[in-house]
Length: 309
Ligand code: ADP
Ligand code: MG
Image (cartoon, rainbow, N blue to C red; front, side, top):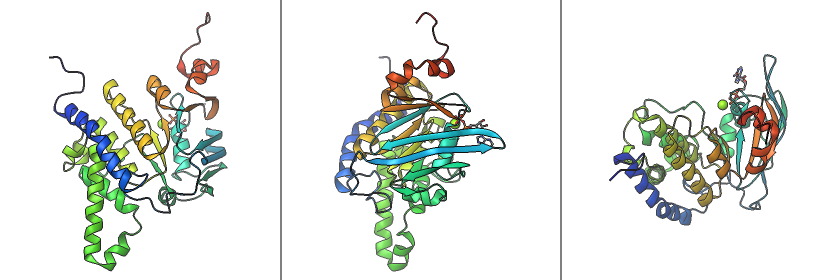
């Protein structure tokens, strides 16, 4: 019998992973309300916040690179639990927006408020610790580490109890290590990577490295997850699987997500609202249906408008 694309040993592992996702996720979410990787700390969750209150407010954000307006007066207001999309042609400023939100570059102007706190000039490390996780358009994994070590390392980097537990007692340290390892493996299983946990991250296919990047971002226990072209380089089947997983982690954990994605049918199905950037400027914002019909968007990004339409 003909197999659907992407099946075979690895595809089957992914489908199995998909089937066991519900069980694994329910278990984790029962144990630790709201997070794929263990309990949330006060750093990353404001338990008193209303579910639909504003999580991220960006006002008139700008970045100029030697006279080039890469991002020009960008604003967004994101409610908790939303999935938002940013689309636009190459060079429009999408990755620069993410780099500004995560402190990787300093804005030329504007203001970023996350969870009620001004984070405009904070370091990437502080911002990550406050609960903004991200993936990069160009994959950034630790090349000399295994798949599992990449996830463990991300967990360690953002677990402030680490040094303290190490100093306090060896059994406490061991228990914590076991817990982190278990959680890392559960997350890898969720993304169909657990059967390759012990191989070098660089030995993974390109698509799987992208999935590992998402698992690693989740290890930060984010409340807001920024995904920069998570399906770049994947075939249609792989892209659909990854976007289904993104939807699932959103639904299960109430994550707020902003995604930059070129796959139009998928991003339109996934996102509550879309923004369109062109030459650093926001040229449209609305529901996928509204954006799809916006003449400026059609002209600048989705293709030339049909004169007879
Ligand atoms: P997108 O992600 O939408 O494709 P980018 O945000 O990567 O676009 O880039 C927006 C513009 O800013 C491009 O013209 C790019 O060349 C420029 N740019 C981005 N990062 C830098 C940088 N670090 N130094 C100089 N120019 C940059
Ligand atoms: Mg980009």
